[in-house]
Image 1 (cartoon, each protein chain N blue to C red):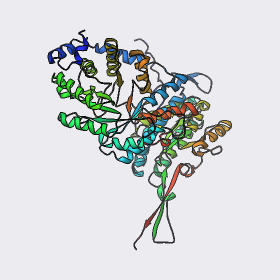
Image 2 (image 1 turned 90 degrees about the horizontal axis):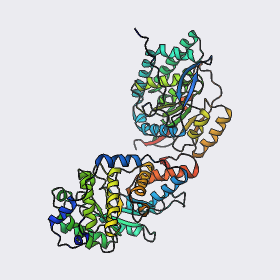
Image 3 (image 1 turned 30 degrees about the vertical axis):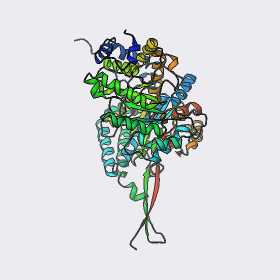
Image 4 (image 1 turned 90 degrees about the vertical axis):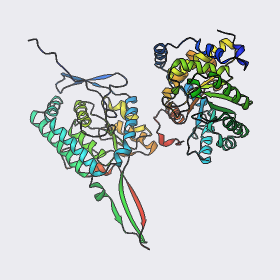
Length: 314
Length: 284
């Protein structure tokens, strides 16, 4: 492995970057899928399940990314983020609320004093097809409005065309714009075609300064899958071993049930390790997942099965 | 010629239009009236109840949105399929202890009962709905709407009793999660095979076999079940279920002992209907 400190220097040549990314060990596809499937069979019950549910709730980035989002819907979502189960004050609050950049101001006002972060998608989410100026302006606006986290999308077209340097420079530029805000880099693994590309994109994002790497926008199928998350968790583990810097992981999209969420937590614990089992280093991007977590929590605390009628829709 | 190996049926559950084994992997031995082994039936667990309720909930809106006429057609189709499996039902009822003639009479009665209820699909609104006289320029009318997901604890009459509690629930647009007779569950699963091949959308009717005392409380306490029919629950169990059902104000139907051969009337249908009244302004 080359000296990683050279990558902090923007003078590193496209050929060197390409050489490094393509020099990463290839992913054993069958092995990764088998490992992820094996870990998904772990049985988590009773007190361990209760712990996992509360941990998962505290890791949720409660998300609404629809064209039809209104300020009212964002306020409702923020109220839910602060008090997921109004009938049970012991339910933890979520980690952050994730909205489009023009609604950041609304979310910041609604979450004032709760300690819940406001994440904004930026850089021409979800396609990432816009000039760099527009992406920077998008990010700046979100930061100015008070976003504490930025979820940017990479330029998949450039990545797939082999122009790693362009992707790298964009991430560096956005990171510079972020200031103190956390930068989550969305790889959109559903469009990267191979697991090898997921590994390369993960390293590329981390080298460029990402604080988090995120699987997907949720607008492309397949969104988050267990094998892809496994590969990204391996990447952050290896990256920390190589550089000493810890990077978080956020699977997003398609995680709808408590069972799914618990599978991801097992994967984190067994792959990256317990250091990542906190909302600071692992997040779940989801919207409908929260209701299922709350229903399962209700079942554990009351002993009867809950119904969706008793939880808010959004 | 060697003797053929016997090909025996695996009796499974019926959830969401599919035939899964119990999540728990358990089975119960079903014996005939003389104590001879008949088959292993699946012994459902609370998680099968949960899955069945999810399936029933998913199917409910679509089933209720169909016209009564269409629901009637589909249920009549069930009766046609029942007719085609007459011999099999007679055999199974004989296994459950009925004589040859009695079994045939019961199958006939069950098919007739099903057809009778199917006919109500597009008529119940006319009978239970009304146009109401009000003091004002309004056309005021009441129409029946299905209650939603109904849990049914079926009685021990393995076919006629089952049909008599199940048909009135689904004919009006409810979906059902049925706990079949504990002593004679096999005809219920054969009925499920009929349902699976007769255009009834998956999830509208879900049939579970196993121990009533184990399953009924979960159904009664489930917050996403709107009503429960305790016909087949013995006294103590029914009382417990009724208490659990009160938590989310389920409708509870708990009739006394029924004579399944008697004229059923509309009581079982109206037990799982809600009345919606609309005030509509008329010409000013």
